Length: 114
Image 1 (cartoon, rainbow, N blue to C red):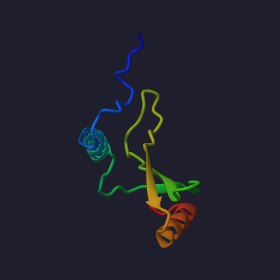
Image 2: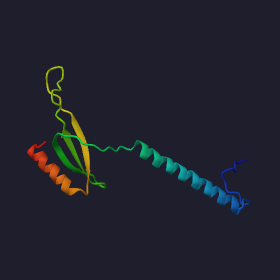
Image 3: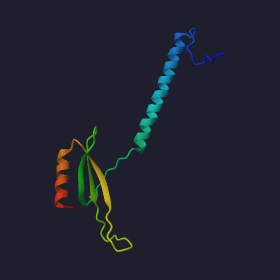
């Protein structure tokens, strides 16, 4: 005996096939919706300001072009247990289509402006 539960039944009507198709479509849409909601919930986005010295700028990306940079926040008075000053590095990204901002950041990284 073979299990024919997964085979198409020739006696099955068109209505049953359409219902099964829409059930599968609904399941896919629900899974896709859950994926979008998880991305929106756990996706990283922040808005604010930081001040420091830009120490690195680079162009990155094969498909999605971005400019990546590092900002040295220079925590004044913060030292480790040996008396060495601590530097806190903040990493940031600039969208690839914002060339003018990239050039400004590159210039201040070369001059060391705060």
